[in-house]
Length: 243
Ligand SMILES: [Mg+2]
Image 1 (cartoon, helix red, strand yellow):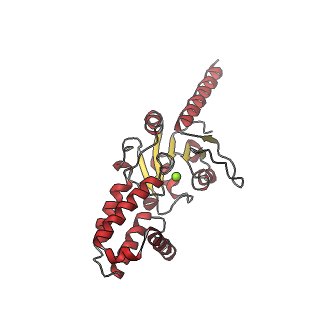
Image 2: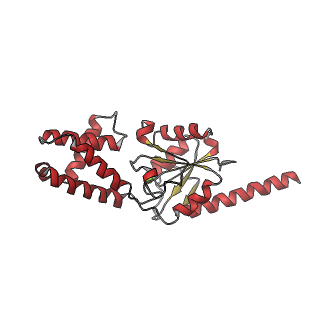
Image 3: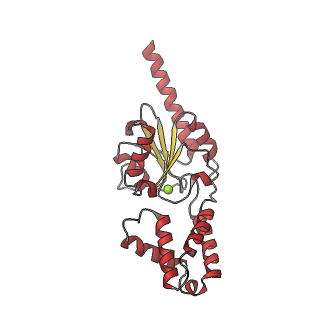
């Protein structure tokens, strides 16, 4: 536990909102839109084939593999070109996807807890995904958001954590990271000397091969309670030192 928590970095997908339903809805909307405009293409590619195309592109282009928006955009451009369609359709398709991708529904605990934490700590969203926090219901919850696209690498790479700490002017010892992924969140933070908090919303077992997190909680209320208790302890220590 850091003596003083000045910065809390917080993962987004599956930590503050469920990810799969919003991606599914965004892809459904995108595919319907494409089917109306590029029927020959969509007759050849279902959702799984499009995903496979993006995966192949990520292997071919490691320079953009961390940027899921860039991968999706380039994949569409190539497919449109191959199908004899106007490549510019990819821009409009991505606008549509982005709008749906930002229609996230945060878990109930998130907004009230972040509003409380925000008064005492710097809060920075760090995400491998492509949700744009300022376009979501959590637009006022964070002081800043950092994406893998901006940092140039996705978690577990330390780039996003470093960017957040540089921005806040704090050290790893003054930072707490909160996320759902044992490797990309908990272990990645621990490797940097950042205290990791695991958000385990659906009661998953901790993977045996990784050192356990500093704290595991089932939602953000658990984090807020733990921080309150830690602060009381610090205040008590200060009081007894003064006596
Ligand atoms: Mg996550």
